[in-house]
Amino acid sequence: MLESEDAVFYIDQHALAERIAFEKMKKEISDRTNLHAELLLQPLTIEIHEILNIQEKIDAVNAL
Image (tube, rainbow, N blue to C red; front, side, top):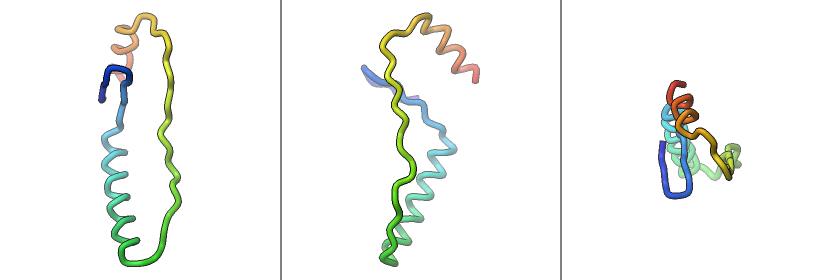
């Protein structure tokens, strides 16, 4: 989990490791050839304007 003053990011570490390996492989392939891939994954942004019982929600997420 990454936090800033106005945002919280939850990151799946396994998915991140796979994404890093994929991007490295894609770069190695594109360096050797003229092949280019299109972007398939886009980040999901959820805006939250009001949070009631935030500690209960944090505990529920941490329990997952």
